[in-house]
Amino acid sequence: MVGSLLFLREVFYYCYGTCIFVYLHMKNLILLLLTISIYSTVIAQSQNEKKVATTQIELFNKVAQLDSSLFAAYNSKKLDLMKTYFTNDLEWYQDNGGLIGFEKVFENFNSIFNRDYDLKRNLIKESLEVHPIEGYGAIEIGKHQFKHIENGKLEIGTFKFLMIWKNDNGNWKISRVISYDH
Image 1: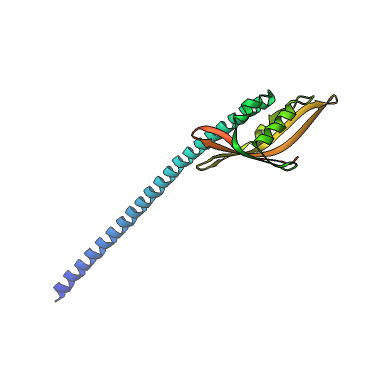
Image 2: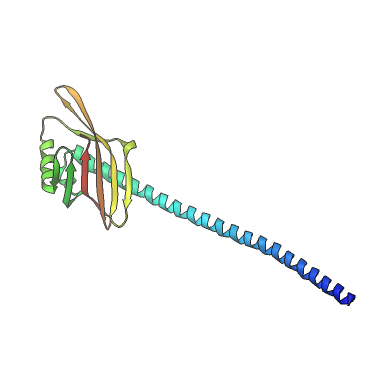
């Protein structure tokens, strides 16, 4: 009987020791798997952030280039070229002028181009923001200055704007403008 008890005690200690050994190794294995999982998630997230950042930089550069081209046409008084930058269903909201459509916008530009003074627009580059609109295009937000000489004195007006750019298969046009803080 004592021999049987000793045998059972040794079997118990052996099993207990094996269980502790397995438990400790399983715990380490679980920690290792958890670490690998977290690391993989961080790497994947980092790669996605780089993709988004690159896309946002490309979008920013595209809209900045479009803005530059549009207002080069404006500063050169090329009305027909300017029209190519806007959709026919254009809505232009101006705090001191209300809502106007495509035809009225270009009547106003034509009037500006026929004034006695030469009005020039400059973007305040550090104010430029570009935000994507998924499945549509982009939002451009910023400040710009309009300068002209009037009565021998330089007049400068700084205003805020928001433009919605529609991307129609790579053909970018402005569909909405909000001009404010006049």
